[in-house]
Image 1 (cartoon, one colour):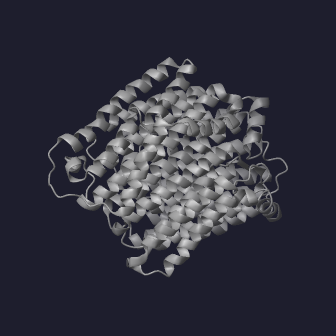
Image 2 (cartoon, one colour):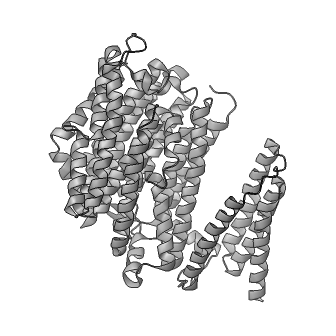
Image 3 (cartoon, chains in turn yellow, green):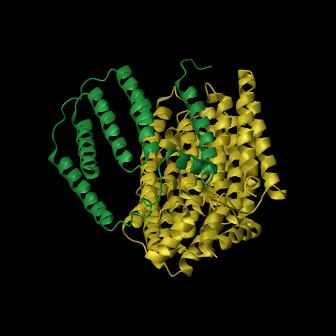
Length: 474
Length: 161
């Protein structure tokens, strides 16, 4: 059972190594086909996970858990990675060197994320999280001839190292107190001794470390600069993949190890969620750069996801999972448009989006669908996700949290619709039409359709997310 | 004997740690860090974690610090310029550090010290754990190292092609 439950991860890592090897034997101009191999391979792994590749159960001395939630996250990461790979193929022209390695690193990051979904032990938590983070240090500074990318890389490296230090420091305290590294051992220790002293200090430090990864206030300082400077597909992957991995770990830890101190963490996460929503949405309003805007918006979405976690019920967790699923398609839609625009106009200023509807109706429509869904307007996926989150919060009688969330939604409408207004009702700077390649066109149509479809026919996804949540929360 | 050695190692480690941040010449700072790590290795020996003590010297004091020194010498760093002494920054730092120390002290006071019991830090014990209980993280770390190697080559090679 041990090894077979790792089949999906081993396949993804193997695909990464295959791409790495093939990259050494391909000519510079042909490297895009490596993107095709990655995307096809990942799709095959996704299909395999649906039909027969998923082996459920606990393995490696309780360190590794494959349950419905792990599988939910793994499929989510696979879908996100497929879309990011397609996006990277559209972006490959801007990468000066190492196109093959770029795809391979994306696959390795995906492997790390898939590992985080099954973590049930602090050592495993640290190793899988570092696999994701270190890959992202490299990917963020990939355009090393360009100062913004390097600056983003250095900032991410320093703050990421700081957050890892918090994490390790916390894990040390927990080990010192409980004498073990497993989540279940921690839960038993808390049940007997209560939370206090050494173990509480350790838990707080670990939560701070995870706070960096999901970009919640007050651990959000790195987000705007890194999102703006990183290559666009990497920003997209950070926004959907790295954040979801952080949430996977957070949920595993909260329900696997910290259940006996639930009252404490519910209060803590509720406060963090409120601050994150307010900060993310208010700071996004004056932004002029679209990637920076989406950076702040990603902070605010972390806040909404934390709302679902703070509800601390199977319903709230299910709502957060559905939110993540909707967020993948919605956010990647916006980033696909940004990649196409940057290929045509060479900058990411919102001002360049003026009159986009006349230059490329498809791009304008895709961006509108994405932004409207991010804002949470029916009938998009984002609306139903927010609806579920708010019902979960109100179901727990957390009225003040719901009120803060409502303020956030109103503020977000302003800045999202500001971009839509620029695209449809402002004069373009230049009239030249923007050409969009066939792959990107297909991806744009697919993401738009998915955003709409998840919003209208929510049933299957909701069921799937709630089944995963019920197994976790019990 | 044991106690005296503990005090000797820890006080010497703290002093050299202080000198790391107080010396103005980066090379001196780095060398004091090596000294601090050697004394920390002494503490590990007192805890009978021999493997950790050796690794501490080989990996940290040896390999990592040599890299530090290489980088410092390559960059040809000059001695740090004297900065203006800001009472607010200094005071703020002291208050935060003091508050943290008080908290840590409270915590350490009633520390149960479960982990220290019966955990042998010998090479055999560490090896056994790595290849049995912690096999999966050990294997994942190899993937992590592969990623790191690929990244270093990509980000540091001179010509882009």
